[in-house]
Amino acid sequence: MGRLRYDGTSEPILIDDETLAHLKVIVGTKLRRQESFMMTWHPREGGDTGRLTVWIHPAIPLQFLFTSADPQNIEKHRIEEMMHALNASGELVIDDYVQSSVVDGSARKG
Image (cartoon, rainbow, N blue to C red; front, side, top):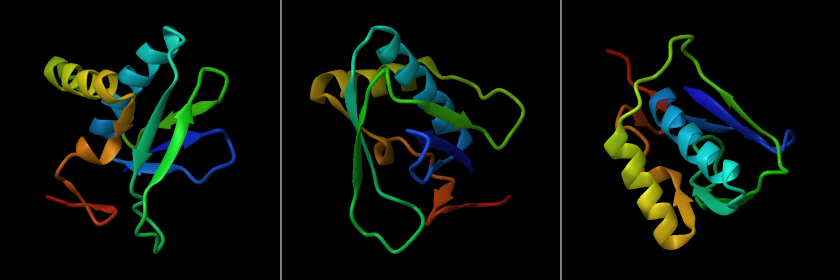
C-alpha cells in the first residue's frame, strides 16, 4: 500500500501502488501546466465515514511513496480516463480509480 503525503503535515493518503503511479502522472501533468485542482477521497484508516478534499496547487509539497521498489506499469487508457474526468469536473475523486485489490484499507494477498 503506497502513500501520498500532501503538504508535509497531513496524514498520508493510503493508496495501492498501481493507482498511485497513475495519480503521480496526472498530478505531475496538471502541476507542470500550473493547473490547480481539487482531489477527493474517502479515508481508508480511522473511523471517518466522510470524505476529504484538498486543493492541489504547485506551491504545496507532495510526496509519493511506493511500497514496491519496482516501477509500476502505466496504462495509457487509464491516464486518459482519469484526466478526462478531472478536466470535465475540476475534481479528481481517487476512490473512482482505486484498484479492486484494495478492500477496507488493506491489500488482498494472493
